[in-house]
Length: 610
Image (cartoon, rainbow, N blue to C red):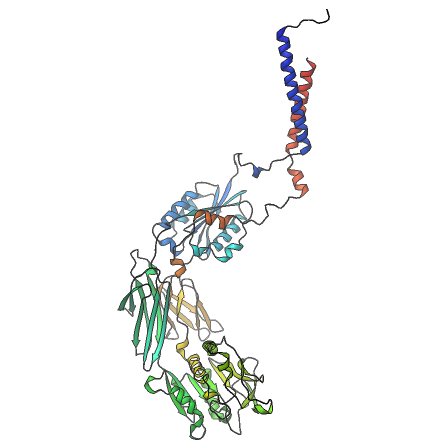
């Protein structure tokens, strides 16, 4: 008998061993394939593994004006304290339109809690860019690998400046935006206020035009008195004033939820009528005929107007017009130069006359009259103007035909000084209008005549608008309205080393000393309201208001905010790592090799026992 019977138990045991050997050999083949693949799993790709790292955090806390509304700032403080419950070291930054580091990176929670408790919202605008930039800089010196930026804000739309789009968030920094406040709150404030003055003879009409986001009641207060009230989305006020002087006040919008931005503060000055003096030594003062017709409108005139053969009573004059500068005596020239250096404006023109001044108060040199027909067949026309200059800024409403229409038969050839600015030229290339500053004033040189002796300019429709723009340019009424937003610098000008004394709305006193150029900057515009400033005994008050963009409480959601703050990196996620770096990270193959050797040894032992 060739076959020997085996117990059933032994057959079953060998079947199990065969199955186990097959599995072990399949496992060896799989491990061998993995070994040749040399696999590795970076730590950052294993979110399922518990993080045991320690964390450095920078808390960015919004203290802009919008945080004063409802309970936003109280929520922000609570969230800031809660952020200290996770992490191992922290730093605190407060921000509005600028950012300030309050505490250094450290693990003493008491220090950070104390800094949080001392904060309060101000009146500045919101800008996330400087806060994010400062937070990133602080985390460059963090002690721990895990780094976090906690941004606590209401995330106004205006807080996302264009600069934020270019912010690069380094790899390894996690952004955690925490939104506070209500998305649906409506706020009443002044979107826009236009304050204009228009002189009507001896009276000045002061006009206030306003615009609100929501229709409401607005009242006007000037120098402590309530003047009137109006209702709507565009309330307007008008006040006629006769006496010159400085006035301050505010517009008040009745808001169910009161706030500092319910008031718009203003300062304006009603000045005496500007004076114009025409120096005309021609027979019967014929050169001043057209000027007198333009400016001397009696009581309805915007300007006080006077004519004379000699410069007189210039202390009450803002604009001095010299119709024939080529005939001015040296004595009168000294008076004219002194007038300009003390802040006046002189407008020089030319006319017939044998003698002429070669030096034009530093504007240039006059080399002699030119007859245009000697240069070209036709009379000269105005070829180019500096349309950005205040004298021509409003004249661009006239079409090119009207600007080119005046014909000039003669003009004085002037070689401008290097510091002078050419404002208009003829088609011959020679200057028509030149300007230069002299002392505190300015000199304008018109190289032709203001009468009809050398041109037909007084008969053109450009004549009156140009004269009035020059008069307005010379008038103190053309000064900027002294209104600023929170945080804006206020520039003062005067004699070097003089001191400016400023009182803010709370009565606090500040002092600014003018530098060697006669300029000084006041940077303490942190409160809305009317400020009083004095320089050499002269009042120079101004007003400061909360920016309308900060009063607009429209916000972004957390998801949109996160996308704006956390999606940028200094490295591309698709950039391959160098081969030597990848080679160093391939540690898993060693474990696979050891496992394969162990399985192979077990398979050998098991096979030998069959």
